[in-house]
Image 1 (cartoon, rainbow over the protein chains, first blue to last red):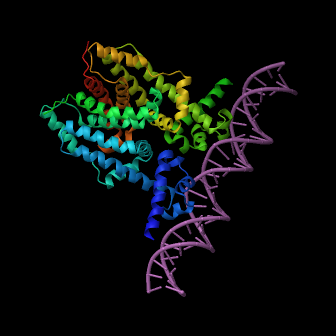
Image 2 (cartoon, helix red, strand yellow):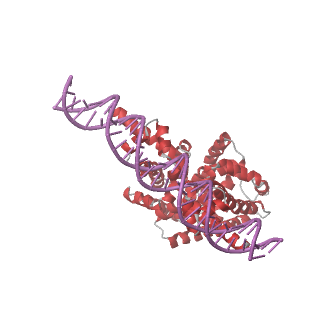
Image 3 (cartoon, chains in turn green, cyan, orange, red):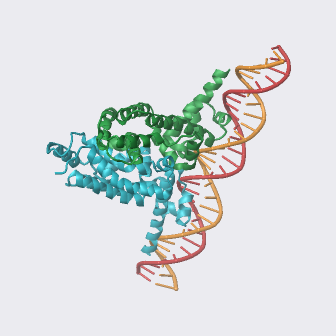
Length: 205
Length: 205
DNA sequence: AAATAGTTTAACCAGATGGTTGAAATATTG
DNA sequence: CAATATTTCAACCATCTGGTTAAACTATTT
């Protein structure tokens, strides 16, 4: 009964994803995960030998969902005025469905810098050199001001991610209910493209 | 012996700050804090009745150091082209001395949204309405494009904080050693003002 | 200097936590 | 369908964790 098997293992994995994301590694309890998955605690150890291994499985899966996407779009051949809205769109769609995943990744990335490093090496995920080249090309072609591609990259990603990372701050400081916050995010999609392209003085070719 | 008393209590508080910032609430151990402070574990309970109360003391102190500063500068009467470099400067100075504090605040803010809300109410810290007014004024005066002040605010803060929040990501993706990372931060101070003022098409008055 | 109050410590405790075990239930195979 | 392998479970265990206690030590007051 491979179906049932998969079901159980998946159930555990999904439950673990939720619990780890909510509480981080240290805050999560194995019993809590078992309850969430509606199974006995020893099943966790049967399928994933330890808390750490279960956590790693979850963490890696999220990393895989998170980084390749960003770098794929970033490395594409589109000009910036096309690429940026695409990137924003891709990320907002993903993040609105997984609003806690950024916090989780960043938190655990900082707690396990070495594992993150290993992950990036193993999966052969490189900083998109294409992106830097493209920026230099577009600068030469007179589309935009001279900027350090790394500074630009971090700025773009920061602008996209920050409202998700600081969700509680945004809501609290502006006094937003959930639906107001969602509206804020939706508005931001429009806002960001213009903001970024202006910032580098981008001229359409 | 009030000096010694204060010394012990302070020692505990400082040790707790370090340990909580490194490990978060759930990841921190009372014994670890006691060791870090070079005192017996029961002293922790003598001065601060429980882990939670000790944590709250630390968390609140960091919130007090963090938010009023930002809002003070934001609420000042300077025009944006003066205010933004000032804000960046104030924050970079603070953050470079306390590089883990942002992660800590954001993480625990998300874990205890209610406590954060209570804090903002108790300390009477409001979203700087001045800031919104100022933006609207400067728009009317033709200094800059039409933008939503809230989007702008979140963008500015995000641009400043993100490299600290995602420290490990920045270092790993760009392959930076500590000193390269510090250089990156230093460069960013210069980069950001121009980036932001361009983004809103700011014209000096 | 005796009495009082405040500070520090070692030893201890109950409950929680990650993890184990061995047997029962279920599915797979010959 | 009997033998074998896999899956599930309740009960259990060693360790760790936050927290307590009672006694020793130190400082302050009278």
